[in-house]
Length: 340
Image (tube, rainbow, N blue to C red; front, side, top):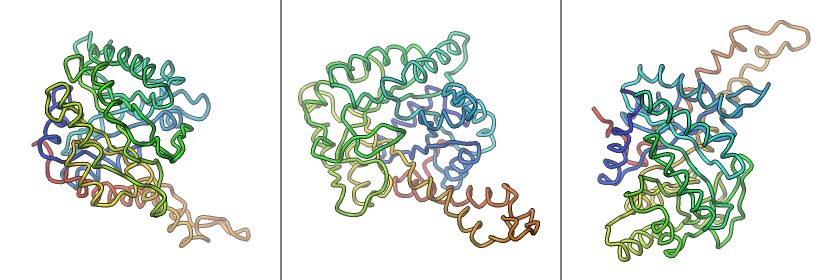
């Protein structure tokens, strides 16, 4: 059962919350990066989350028509087959989806999984993300209510982002400023609208200074201790201890101390994209520079086929990215925790 069933995915998240560890959520854009993520999880003996953003799905759909749903479905179906060879369990997730892309991405994917569930099958994806951080909180939560109901019907967990994450990802950008911190009032309004489990399970991407990408020290001020305040504020009002399953966005480049604080305060999923992109690309660059004359037909020569064969540099790329996933599992304390 390498692709988690809905029941197993819930178990994974419960285990992470109780054990104060989190699953690396690795963005993938190809079969190669998918294998790199799976390999990294397997080598770390960690379960994990594979995710596809709207831009990643568009890329996977091919540059001829750039269809996001086709790209996401194709890689998910591929993952269901190849993941069987890895001795770990992974959940499939779709990353950031803003309002203008819901009809072309998350809503059709929810319908596909609902149809599968109606036929007695498991959903194609285990969770989807609604990124309403560019909307007013009222509009964000109203759409969240609609999507949560659809997700529950398809046995899927919804992820919601209620306040902005700084930086840019797939064309969605927010300034790096004081608005990048979720308030207790924001968290209370979220609990009032989406419930605390009775309306369906959801993951909460709260903002504590998170920024997509990697920035030099001093440019970003993370306050993961804020998550403790959000948990306590909502717990006091609703009487449910540690009510939220938090997601750490903009996790690339974070310090060990920041990650540890986030884990202690309820983070069960941390997104990695920038660091794993670099880990995938860096060995390729090294190969091209080292084998310059072989990969190019310089001065009329014929080059060296074994040097420009994509399998040659592709293997190095996979190994580089897998190693970064292993490092992430260690940092997030998920290494060695796989479901047997």
